[in-house]
Image (cartoon, rainbow, N blue to C red):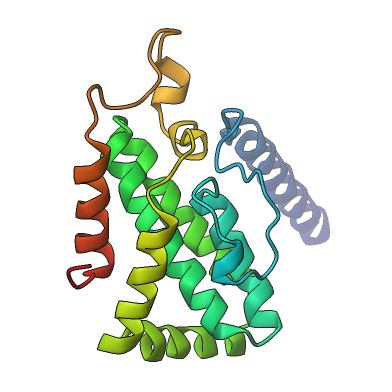
Length: 199
C-alpha cells in the first residue's frame, strides 16, 4: 500500500513539475531584435592602413574595424592613429546627428573593435595608445595628421540608423542638425576629443 502511495506522490510531483515547466515555456516572452538597414554599416574594408591612405570619406565604422587588423600585425602606431581619427569623427557626428539615442553607435563600434582582439593584443594596444597619444609630441603629430585629413565628408548613416529615430523619422528628415557649422564643430571635435594643441 505504501508503495502505491509513494508511486502516486512521485507521479503527481512529476505531473505538477512538467505542467509548471510547460507553463513557463509558454509565458516566457520572445525577444525580437529590430535593426534598421545601415545600422553601424561599414562601406570600406581598410585593413591596417597608414595615415597616407586615410581619407575623410571613411566613417568610424570603417576605422574602428581596421584597428584589430593593425594589432594582429603588431602595427600599434597605425592602430593608434586610426583610433584617434575614429574617435574624432565620432565626436563630430554626435554634434551633427540630432537623434541622441543614435550617438551610442560610437561606443558600440569601439566595443566591437576591442572584442575582436585577444586580451594580450587589447592590452598592448591600450599601452601603445597611451604612449603614442599620451605624450605631447605624439599627440601633436596625431592631431596634425587628423587636421590634414580634415573633417568628415560622408553622410553618417551608420549612426543615424542606429538610433530610435530610424524607426520614427519621416521621409523629409535627414537626421542632421539644420544650419550645421562644420568648421566650428570640427574645431570642437579636435579640442574636446583629442584635446589637440592649437594647430
